[in-house]
Amino acid sequence: MTLIIISAFIVVILLNAWIIWATIHRALRKNIIPYLMEKGMFFERYKWLGFFNTGDFDELTLTFGGTTASASLSIYIDVYYQSSKEQRRTTARIDTFYFFIRKVKYSSEI
Image (tube, rainbow, N blue to C red; front, side, top):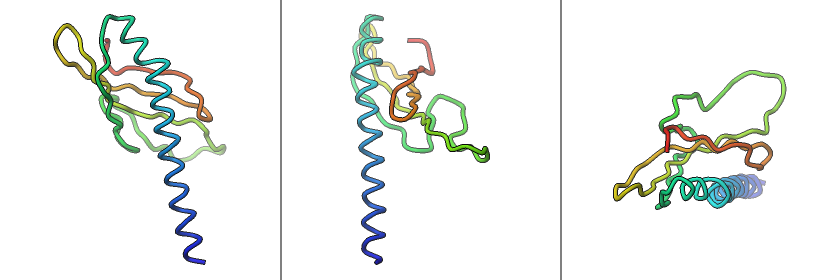
């Protein structure tokens, strides 16, 4: 019985990690990289900030209370890009609803 509970816990963690990874790569491909190219910038890399870090956004990551379960999630990543021979960084907030990307917001003007 203990082995089943541990296995289920590991599966849930791996599934969450895969969902976050897939969402980040979809946002990069459809939103972030095209936006940078439109502004004349070049994407270099990204860094996922973790579950509780909001980067340059000054927000709470956990909310307690409420009567309905929320299926929305915000994923925060640091985006490193090249701008006129200098490397820059901004934090991007990827707002999702049931694994669909609703909006991508940047902490600073690009």
